[in-house]
Amino acid sequence: MLKFIIVGQDLKRLDVTRVVSDSRNYLMAEFRLIDDEWRHAPLVTVTFNRVDKEDSCYSIELKDNKCPVPWEVLTDEGLMEVSLQCGSCSGEKCITTNTVLIRIHSCGKKCGLIPTEASPGIYQQLVERVEKAEEDIKSMIPITIEEISELFKA
Image (cartoon, rainbow, N blue to C red; front, side):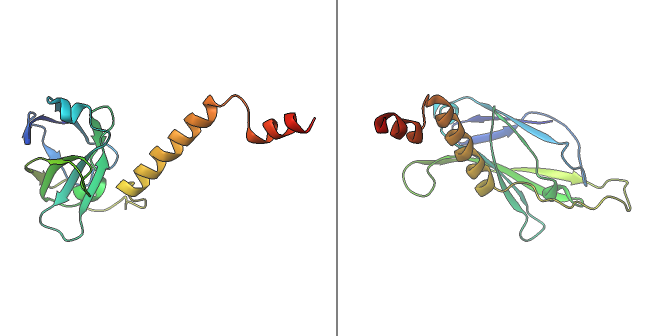
């Protein structure tokens, strides 16, 4: 597991885990959020970016201070950057961190499994979050609108 600490806008790596290419649904990242602004932010995203490949940048929502490392950034040996963002980066307050560079080492696999399903993007993660909130709200309502209408018809 990759381990990081965030103090203010300073992101530092705490572990010495050797990252090996071509792993899928295995490598996790964990973050210690020191400041209240990070701990109480409604949404914190982690960005994983391959500096040596085009179109290899993925943002993942941080949940319980952990997130999976997208397998797409682990294909082949090379260099990956990790950074975080929180707040409303489209308008009001947005907090970002520096990037931490991580070397991805070559694996021994020469052929075999080909990843077929992409990691969920930030849009999909947000849709799932809204859908869960909607389900939670519906479960709190003891009676439906249709049932209320039936009561007044009687």
